[in-house]
Length: 169
Ligand code: NI
Image 1 (tube, rainbow, N blue to C red):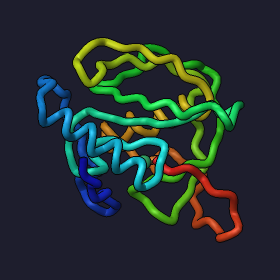
Image 2: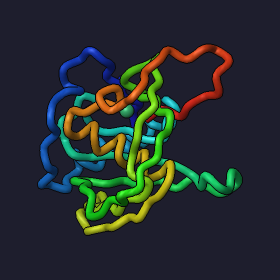
Image 3: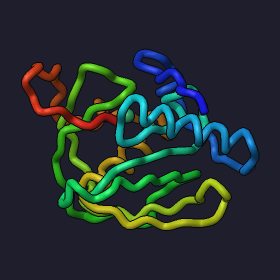
Image 4: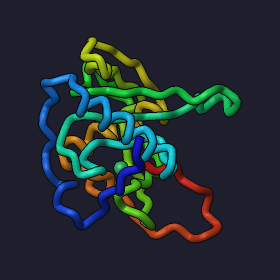
C-alpha cells in the first residue's frame, strides 16, 4: 500500500467529472487499498478518487456511530455510487475538505440517503445512511461530479485555532 498525495485546489482535476468504473481488475484493487491508506494518514472520514487525481467513480468512507463514540468505525468502499433515495428533510452542518485545507463551510444536506453502488468485487450494494454518514456520502459523491462543498455552502470561513475540529473528507 502507498500513501497518495492529496490533490488540492486550484488543481483543475477536482472540477472534472469522474468516469464510471467498468473493470474490477488489479489496478482498481490497488487504487482502493491506496485510497484507504491515504484516508487513514490524512486523517479523514472520506476520500474520492479525484482527490488523488484519478478520474474514476470510487469513494472510501470511514465513520463510526455519531451517537456512540465507542462504536468501532465502519469502512465503506463504493464504486459507481448513486443515490436511490434522498429525504426531503435537510440539515445544516459544518464541513471541511482534505482538498481545501484551512476553509470550513456550513452546508445544507439531506438528512437521510440511500446509496447504491458496487463493492470492490463488483457486487451490488445498498447503504442506508443518516446524519453525518449521509452527509459524508453526499460530500464524496459530489467530488465525483467536480462539485466541492464551497459551491454549496451558505457560509465559508477560515477556522480559528480554538474552534472545535471538523472532520475533513
Ligand atoms: Ni472533500
